Structures are given as C-alpha cells and as structure tokens.
Length: 367
Image (cartoon, rainbow, N blue to C red; front, side):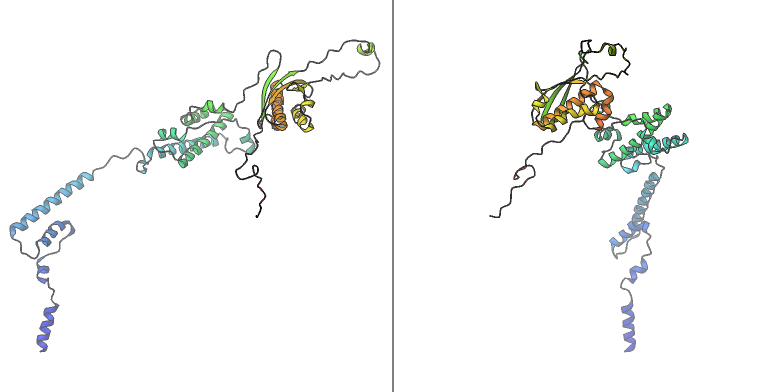
C-alpha cells in the first residue's frame, strides 16, 4: 500500500510539460521570432522541412535588422548650433552672442580702468536714450515668439550694453563705442528719432516787436498770453531836476538812480485787480514774475476762457511762466524747480453713480 502511494506521489510530482521541456532548448532573445513560431505550432511535432523554413525566415529577419543598424550607426553631421535641440535655437544663439559681447566689453573697460565707476561718475555720464524694437519686430529677428519674459531678458542685456556705450563715449574711446554701437543699432527701433522728439518742447519765437505768445492751461481753463518788455522812461531835464546833481557838480555823493517801471497786466481787457478780486488768485498770477525776479519788467495781456477763477488764474500763471522762459532762458532752471513750466495735471474727479459727489455719500437713513 505504501509502495503504491509512493508511486502515485512520484507520478504527481512530475511536470505535466516535461516532455516538451526536454525537447525544446533555451531560446535567446534574438531568436524570439522563431521561438514564437514554435509556440504557435503547439505541441505538434514539426518535420524537417518546416523547421528549415522557419530557421531561414528567422535568419533573413536578423540580416535585415543588422543592415538597418549598420545604416543608422553611421556618423551624422553635427548641428551648426549647440542650441539645435532646444526648439528655439535662434533665440538662444542671439542671447549667447549678447552675453559674449557684454563680457568682452566689460573686460575691455576694466583693462582701461573705466570699471567699476563710483556713483558720482555714473551721474555725470552723457545721457544716451534709446528705443528698442517692439516684441513683434523682435519676433521676426529672433525667429521665435517673443513673450514678455523673453523680451525683458533681451532688453535687460541691451540696456547693460547701452550703459557701457555711455561710458566709452564719455571717456572718448571712439573705437570701443563704435563696436558697441554696431551691435545696439541692430535692435534699435526705426522710429527712435520720432519717439524721442515727442517730449521736446518747441522754443517760443519772439516776433519783430519782441513779443512772445504762449498758451497756458489749468483744469478746464485755457489762456493765451502775450508778453512784451517794458521800455524804461527816458529822463528829461526839467525844472524839478537839480542841475548840479545832474552834471555831477555837487559835493554830495551821487546815488545810482533806481528805475522803477510800471507794468500792466490785463486779463480779458480788464486790470488784474478788477478781474480777480480774490488776493489768492492775483498772487498765483504774479508768482512766476516774482520767482524769476522780473516783476514790473513785462507788460502782460491775456485772453482766458473756461473754468472758474482758480482754473483761470492757474492757466494765466502757466502761460506767463512759459513767456518768461522765452524772453530769458536762464530763468528756466528756477522755473522748472518751482514746477511752473509744467501743466498741473490735477483735474476735478467725476461724480460717481449712487454718490452725492465724487466720493461723498448720502446720509444713511434706517427708515
């Protein structure tokens, strides 16, 4: 009984595919096609012709794979740019060129002992404003969509290069400045001159009588101002004049005469005191004359329209300041410091819907 049980256990322990396992050798991965074909054939026994045909087909496929690998293993031509595989090779190439130009320029200026500069030297450099191309124009040059971040990166490099151009130009190194300028000119906008000329004020021309015509604005008021120098009165010899003092025969020390000229300020064909009864408005009009030190030196005629007394007095003061600068350009610095040559941009804030005024609210009532 034990013998039969042991025989039964030995039979059960045998693998069911033992016969197939002994007849099929190990197949390497390169011959998986032939191996799969054998599996597809199942447990059937193949004749010699079928085995030879399968082996021939497998060898042919291996030969084709070897030829394909041999063709692909040939040395390929290296790309012209190291940034070829970035997808934006033109953009990165230009960035690298700008960085190299900045590095070379910085080294040149350091060898010339022009870098680093102290703070007072930076302030004394010649201003050289520039206008760069727009992102749309740079998109064509860089052959890449110029996003805001990329545009900022390019303009930051160009601004640094422009600072080095200012240093080289101020120091008098024309050859260095010319090389830097040749790089910067590639990225400058064609509308640079027109853009920089927008904020330049045209000088006021005096007519044949020495009069200036200026235009002042404040709030909704506008004033046209004419200014003409006052001619000093000629001193005539009369009965009230001492002859000895006139000809220097008196022993008393002669004091230099003080010529007090009386000027006129007419506003809409009315004197200033009559048109502006409030002293604060009259002080606002006379302030440019006092600051420039030309009070009583010019006759002023104005025509003002629109707005109230505050706006009209401010418009007249603006026009007078511009007229003084036209007659005496040396007073421009003090007038600019007093902010009289610049139009006051403050305007009345508009009324809002649901509010009493611009910001005032209605009183809240519970019932």
